[in-house]
Picture 1 (tube, rainbow, N blue to C red):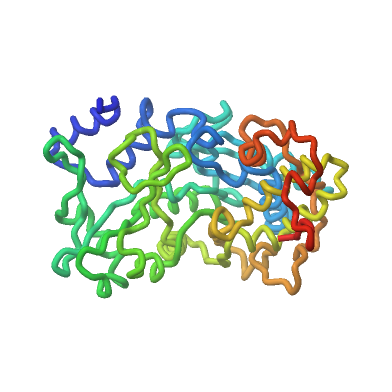
Picture 2 (picture 1 turned 90 degrees about the vertical axis):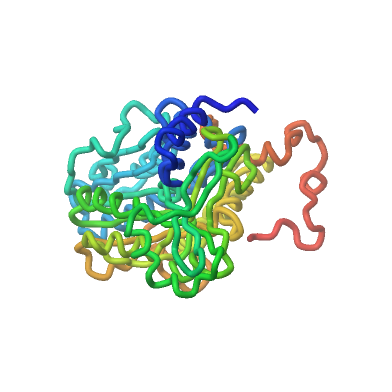
Length: 417
């Protein structure tokens, strides 16, 4: 197989330096300005490699807006409320949030000042492309990210004869591979100090040192307010459990998963799950306290996602459109997929905030006392992923009954999930 331009670039560097850390390899594979994975458009789409909650349905952004509105209220409804989204990608979440902000009658939309940031993705012209060039803001508001931290370049390690070794990327016999060596940074060992005693020989996993730099940037952005982080991961004890002895590295290529980061270089996404204990510590070091953490499915349900789902039947749309909207909402809530993402909220200079998304209300309805915005429906935005069309490509041509098309259970109908 002919090596890509990016793979050749990486091989040339390894031949010059002898080896590079996996973090350096991952950074180049994802963020090389010309040939990195995120330098190309269309990565988040049905024809790309994966899709996200905002691309599935606008209800996701609407409910994030509900939570941001409540945060604004908790902060005393300041005349200026900054929302700074890191890793904004194609900007669809930002657009959904801002579209729904105007539907509150409290003046929230006039107070909200939304800034989108992205390191490499092709985003709207208003985006500051490099967060490192962003001026310090020191604002009152919230830093928001969705599926960002898992794309931070991470170091890989292995335990050899009871000793912690870093896995370096090398070239051997013309093939890119890994070999153990000394740690490139003592912070790797320090991060693992509390868990390393129980790790057996051969245990392999990752350490994300970039969280500290990110937390420093967040602290400069927000002098008072919140950090809302949505990503996949675990607390440290679960992250570095024996059950995950091969680590959490995942490679996404055309909606399929594999475990080989050295194939499709620049053409596949590389992610490493988030150590939420390390996230807590990084933000604590810069003055943020952990307000709580929950699963995305629970977070959205508490804010009113099930109410949105119920409203579909009275929305005055076709049964086909009801099915398409319901399928997209269910995908966001599925506990074995997007619904399993964690939502972590941290606060700074806010005394024990009570937030609806983290509450544990009795019953199944929305916990928020504020009225929900109008029901958001799927639109023709090309950034959306057409889940229904992908599952039922000929549904528009079908002329049978609803039950025949969707195989509705004759006994129970279409159950609420």
